[in-house]
Length: 132
Image 1 (cartoon, rainbow, N blue to C red):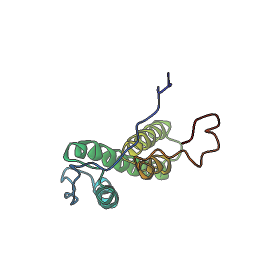
Image 2 (image 1 turned 180 degrees about the vertical axis):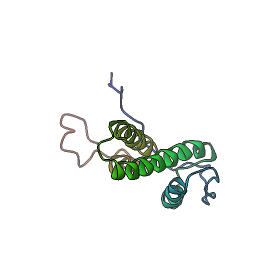
Image 3 (image 1 turned 30 degrees about the vertical axis):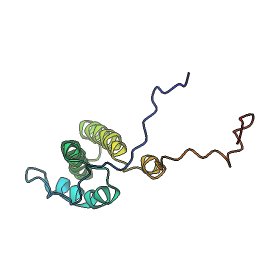
């Protein structure tokens, strides 16, 4: 039995992936729209975004836009614990959402390593297995 609790499945190209980045939703803040324009080309290029993912990407961009707004607020009043707490939560949520779409180094490696091949011939840890 393999322990898989907490292990995320590898992200791979989707056969229904979008081929063109949609325009940023008009309701997004300027910071969130800038984030949308920054991340969408790479996601489209990797072929992992489908239409149903767009609401999650809106959430990611919204949270990153909020983080920028909170950062600006902290630059004016650096000891505001409430704003710092909101910034901390926005950054945490942003990291979690970014990982869902392969926007962190570790999650990008998962996307890049999803080749579908299981070649253990050069794996020194495969001791004791019958290699044919």
